Length: 296
Image 1 (cartoon, helix red, strand yellow):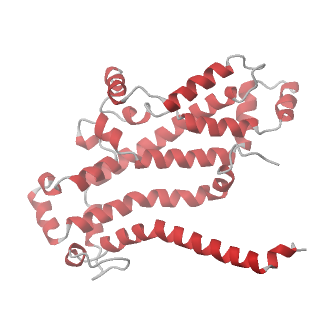
Image 2 (cartoon, rainbow, N blue to C red; image 1 turned 30 degrees about the horizontal axis):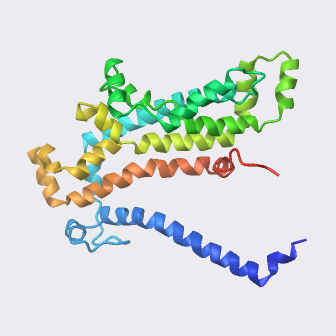
Image 3 (cartoon, rainbow, N blue to C red; image 1 turned 120 degrees about the vertical axis):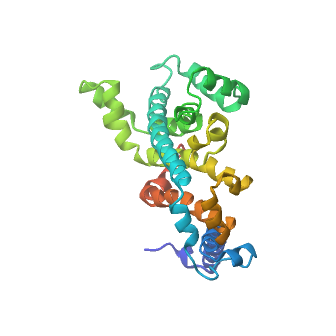
């Protein structure tokens, strides 16, 4: 039987108001992406004149054909994919390995408070840009994929999310496993991790998006442009004159197109993979948003 307040006039007005707010919020997120797609599918003259908003003018796919033939773009795409795969795998492994012991009580892990304060300190303070660059430089990983993966492999915020999820699990599960002769390693990977799919999916999504959208570290740690990840490559195109780096043949092709449509096509292609990943993690994402919340 439905509660009476669900059918009241006030509740209906509140529901309609919520739908309007959510619709406006969704529109604010989608309109820029739709605009980029429309510009990329429009003719160079219309796009350059600023006549395109949410619908292509003089529909054409020439910008995408040019991008598909660009070896620099696909090399940067491969670097970003490699970075996301390695960064997510290493980051999630370290997050789980750090969160499990820190989720124990102080009488089980006596040094827990010390390590918690060390991790918390790193959230408030860091070594700075120059010292971090020197560390990367003297470890010999400059201008390699590891310079994009290792410095940010341990994310304290992700550890706290995973830690809180581990602490919310019933203690009886762990006690029963110990009685059956299981070790901490078996308990972690056979009990805790399978039961933590919402937390793992949420943190995985955060990690993927973080690595995919990062551009500054590529500019900082990569001395050769062909090692740029995709977002660094796109940022360089948006801030410099791309014609300086094109061959005469490419310049002739670009002259028939428009830098604006080419950049829009590249930006949309760069955003598309993340949009494809979210639906697969969406069913866990809602649960993951309330990690560590107080339950009644």
